[in-house]
Image (cartoon, rainbow, N blue to C red):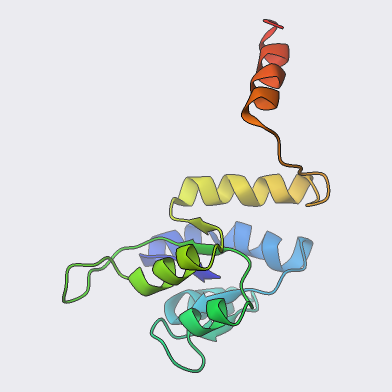
Length: 139
């Protein structure tokens, strides 16, 4: 589920959105502004409203339609909460992975592009450190 802030960021992420849709073959759900930008670039995305209710991003997350939330906040509501607060809150509450940094999002898409989910296995921190020592020649 994509919800990126300023128009510039929406277009900056266009190549990665195309990879998600075309190379990875994953459906894209996007908030209104993001969906409009993607459609303008010929990338298919299902438009969702931000607020709760049928056809909302919050509802799609609650119904298990979303496996990853990419939400880059830009505006604030009347209570001073960043835009998309409820989207992020529901994602965290339901254990749906959430990314709020655009550069990290681009790196994750690139990793998924080159490695299947089956290849990506959880490692303990010790296993990770041992691998890093091997790479750096310290092991």
